[in-house]
Structures are given as structure tokens and as C-alpha cells.
Length: 76
Image 1 (cartoon, rainbow, N blue to C red):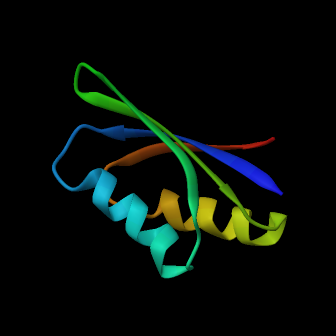
Image 2 (cartoon, rainbow, N blue to C red):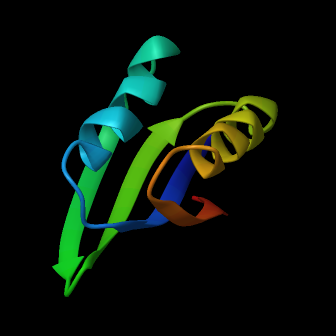
């Protein structure tokens, strides 16, 4: 199933690299990636195709990353 992770993070060096690395470790293909800089924050939308269980595990793993403030998971 296709899932979009809506991530809010502090605008710091290597934030995007660390996020993408998490998906790479699972050998997942990122279908789309959008990054918007807003003052000292970044909004990142990342879409991939995974099962629900893995999507939720990835969401939890993302929350534990340095500089990540919020992670929302949306189907579709």
C-alpha cells in the first residue's frame, strides 16, 4: 500500500540524509519526496509503498531521530 510520511523537523544539516537512510536500510523505493523550508523548520513529504506494519515501525523509528518534531502517516 502507498503511504505518505509528513515530517516536520528542525532545519539542520543532515536531517534529510538521515531520513532517507532509514528507508534505504529497509531497501524501500521512495516514490516521491518534497521538502519545503519554513523559517527554521522543514516540512518533508515522503511517499513509499509498504505494508501497514512496516509503515508504523518506520513512523516510530522516525520519531526517535534527532531534530524530528512530528511524523504523520497518511494512506494513499
